[in-house]
Length: 294
Image (cartoon, rainbow, N blue to C red; front, side, top):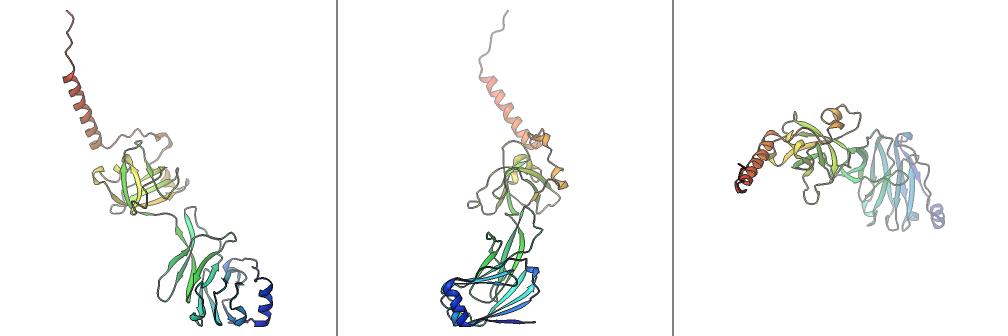
């Protein structure tokens, strides 16, 4: 059932001359039974900042001075437990600062490597992330200048797919990552050959995302060789952070293998041995002959 809330100009003008509307107690989105609400914004709201807590504080509506310049109706429709549709009867009534809509996310089962974001869709644009930073009181906010739908969703933190390069470092199943902190275990798998995968420990930062925008990880040569010959240089992979209880975290990596006993791939070892042999021959040919004692 549609609940219509009317605010009278005289009462509102008196309140706003003294102090702005204070925030109510915040509740999870699913904590309210109301599904629809209409706010009639009359002349008493024009030219003043405002703060409204709707649906038991699950949704917050705010604007600064100049945010509303003409009377209008603002309709809220709860389309689900995590989303809301906002309609403006007269979009021209909104000033250049626009109106801010804030949602209080419900308690989520997001893992350590996920983040809660606020997405917005309009009649002219598909879903786009508008905010990933929650305020101190737990809200995610987006500024609107037209009717839109807002929803709270969970998405992975950091880049999860891209190019993998390699470098010789410590001959270990380790890697440099611009997204995950040192000590994180990452499950790295080739996109074109999903059966080829490895688990690495992040022990360095890089590559720089502003220089290599498509580079998701830089693998030690040993780890890279488990996915592809070193001569490939660059391969496309997916990267997935693992928690300690994930059974895949112990498939490849063992704490006793810190400096792994597994050497470089055969072809790399042969190249290295060839260089050593050539260096030894050059050294022996250039050294003076020693006379053997009689």
